[in-house]
Image (cartoon, rainbow, N blue to C red; front, side, top):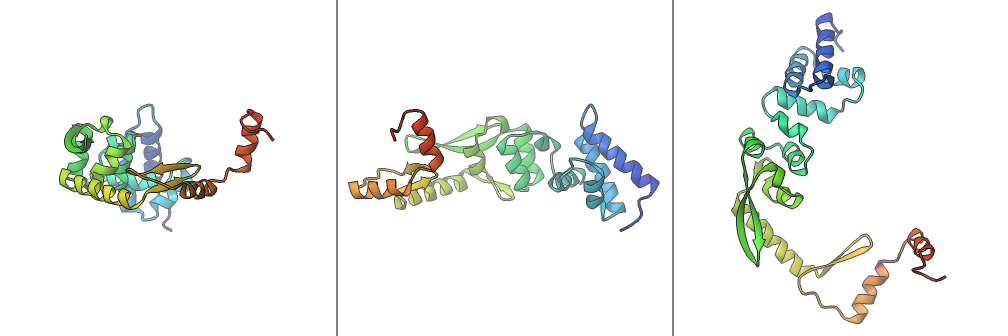
Length: 204
C-alpha cells in the first residue's frame, strides 16, 4: 500500500467535509474521490478505514458521480425508482429523463394498455420495475411484452403461497380437496397460535 502524503490526507478531510458538512455536496465529493483514486488505487480501502459510516457501495456510486456517469440527485432520492435507476446503471440520458423530465409507463385499464408519462416522484414500485430495465429505460412495447408474459404465467400458475397468504391468479377454480391441501401447507407457526389464543381467537 502506498504511503499517505499530506496532500492526500487533506483530500480525505475535504472528501469527509463534502459528505458531512452543513450542505452535503455529492458532486464535489465525487470529484475529490476520483482525484484520490487516480493518485492511489487503495483509496476505497483507506476511506473505509478512515471515515466512519462510509460503505463500499456509496464510494462506488460517488466515483460514478465524479466521473460524470451518475446524476447526484438520484443518490439523494430515497424512492425505489431512483435506487433502481442507480443499481441498474442507466445511461446519463435516461437518468436525466428521470430527474428532470418524464418517463413513459404502461398501465392497464379494463384490459387495455395505456401509455402514461410519469415523473420520478409519481412512479410506484410497479412502474419502476416495469419501466427501468438493466442498463436502459424500457420502451412501451417492451413493457407490454413483459405484461403479456406475466399474464401467460398467471394462467399457468393457478395460485402462489406467500408466507401465510395465498395469491390466486385469474379465474382459479379449486376442488375442496385441493383447497384443504393448500391449507395444510399453510400450517400456522407456534407463535401465531399463541397470539391467537391470547386474543381469544382460538380456544385451547
